[in-house]
Length: 344
Image (cartoon, rainbow, N blue to C red):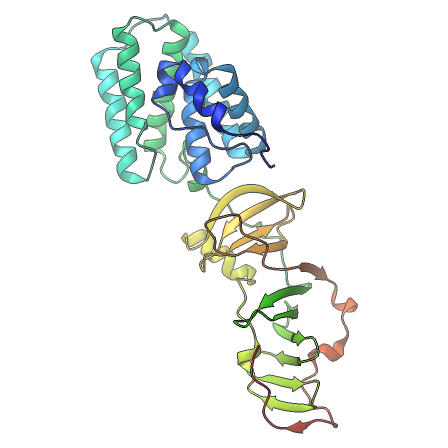
């Protein structure tokens, strides 16, 4: 989801409430990254003290984030339980417990510095005698959830990205041929295309690199050997592995292992070309986009801005849709052995 409105009014509205002043600025609508979710959860904890514009931003994020929805449900249940208790002023031991929990949480994982400000804001509200039972309930609910987060490590209620994400065991890529098309640019500014067919079950690849009028090299490779064919000059060369362009992690078994060990990180859900996707940062820093059936949709390169998809096209094909000649590693009769041209 894209945000066509400026985020400035959201930040200006924060000055309207004392607790709002202690919180970091709200994220831009549509941002479902780790930092955004952490900030949204702070606002959920003090929902009753938010301004209407703030509530709108938080609500729109929660609608698009499954894990923040679960967090909201936990807070709602906690608040409901707290409402059954008589309104009272928490003692110094409660304040101390909250501060200890915050200190431990900040030691265990990176969190906005304004977490400590929640306690300061609460203290300021008490000194000004502005707290109401509803506000007190909201702060107590936040404290309860924060303490639970310390107790439950990997399944932390306040940490969406420490929760386990796994590709179901019945999902497989082995029954398909993965086709991808990528447009690249060399150091001279010349554009060329790389088209790849990856037989996932046999782990055999056919990669063709084409620069219009200048180059057409096809490489067929398995685990042991790689046959390169210069289609323009009818020259063949063995051990042409350098033409097998580096690719992100397309091994589902390895991806499962990396998710389990923490080498790959689940970044939450997002949208790609209007469809919902799972986002996973692979060990090499690329972000894999999987559809709701856990099939690869595209890959985002490492970037600090808004990265463009790495591939022009990504398709999952049935083996019957692909000619068996793509995997042929016999040197054609009309080719002579020699040296392939230099790479683009």
